[in-house]
Image (cartoon, rainbow, N blue to C red; front, side):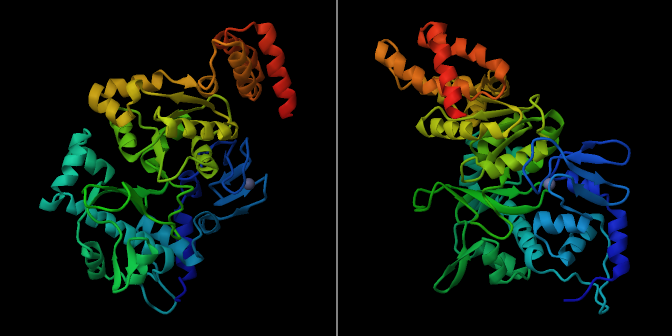
Length: 440
Ligand SMILES: [Zn+2]
């Protein structure tokens, strides 16, 4: 592979502010003259020990010892090669690189090609949304309250029904079948590769820096035997455990407000943003997990209890399970966690459609602390009219109150629990204290 001229490597580095590159992934705040700090992306921490010094182009973590310049940051963070790191940053500032063997064309290989293929596919799908065949796709969006402007804002597209449309369009742009397969855009059949997404509305999924890395696709036609939602499989650039839909659009507001809203689907993210809740994100075809929390905490700059994480869940059984799972991870946030459940079992998309933007904003304002929501979930399984039911419910709910991180909140929630159970504080307090001792 041709080497990039050292003078160019130095020039691109000199023209790039490392704080901008790090800041795309980690919320940074001032840490004295010439220094900024944030939560380390290389290890899990509660308070920031990751320092960036823009003037010297250098980062260092006092917690885990990781350090280096902007190229080593991209290599460690995005798993790029050195050449790819330089090419990425040169492309960002429109700088033409020169190679040792005299060539000037970038040696685009590996990940760079996967990003390019994903971007080309997103463009292709987007252009298809205007086609005659995409009528069903436009209707799907229209019925959910999304007009052409909304579709354009989120880059939504349409994947045609045939087997080879996107494949042929990208082949014509010079992408090989192997590149398309590695990017998760096509599947391997007996007679070559064919389009993974067919006859579907397609949402491009972008990483924190705004690069398209994959897709979520909703089926439109009854004769489609596939799942309702189909996503890009795991690829070198698409890791579903870390990907959050909408994070590229909401990153700035999340980091400014230290607030994030976690919803369940692509259309919910759209509805929230259009209603003015511009901090909404969703997981893509997987449950909200600990890797998602790590990504969010860095973007939020989550190092104090002043932040807010609001989960919206469907009130159905699956939503309740999701809520309990989120609660199990709740302690990983420094921020306060809340749950917002819409009236009449509506998700944010339906809520906006039926009752308007104001109702979506009101839903977020009507959030309840996550402990209270989980206590209610626990109590729902017991007959509180009977002594046996109340004793069982107390035993099930006491550990929730005992686990509340902020000890100053515990007495208040003990009273809340006692009131919900219709029991004396004198009975409930010892149960909570016992549960606290048991968990320690
Ligand atoms: Zn670290």
